[in-house]
Amino acid sequence: MQVGAWLSSFIYIVSSSLLYPTLLLLCFLPLWMLFYAGAFVAEWLERRSLKSVPACELPRFLADQDPRQVFSHRVLAYLRGLRSLLADPHAASQPVIENHLQEAIHGFARSLDKLRMLVRIGPGLGLMGTLIPLGTGLAALGRGDMTKLTSDLVVAFTTTVVGLAVGMSAYFFHTIKKRWVEHDIRMIEFITETLTGPPTGGTADAIHEEEEDAEG
Image (cartoon, rainbow, N blue to C red; front, side):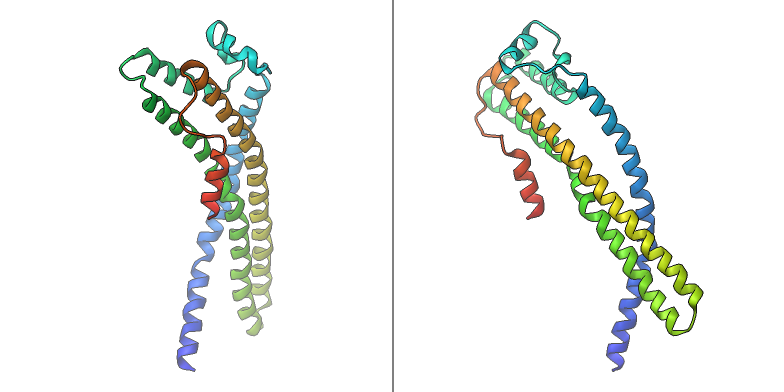
């Protein structure tokens, strides 16, 4: 019995010690989501201003016209890097170009990592912020301290709301951003094929492979 009581006390102490870090993260994450929402809206406005051009006309924009009219800033950054490689005949080997393409694809996929984590971390922190105060609240109820119980219940329910709000917001941003990233990957593959020939490795399922690795 003493061992069981000691273990229960230890778990209670560990659980209670996690309350303030959980509350701190739940205060920080909505602020980060607001900051990210501003960047998201800026990118959305940028993409709305881009021209919708058929694939058969894209090589003309690469050769004669301003590519900023049809490509996002990420694709333009890749295009500048690719042209720098092609300007140096000694560096423009097929493996180097393929590595440049794969690094760009990996970077695009990595840009979704934070949102993918927040989809799960937000509700998880909300659940922790709910259960930890409920434990201390029940202990206060056993002592007849209704004021402590009331304050703990307020913390429990508000942390649930904040955690769910963070998770839903992250899921919304992730869904839209994933479509943008997949489009950008198709564009850099097209640019690479147009300027250098077909890449040596298949990359159409890069985003799905990244997500399967994360979930696995």
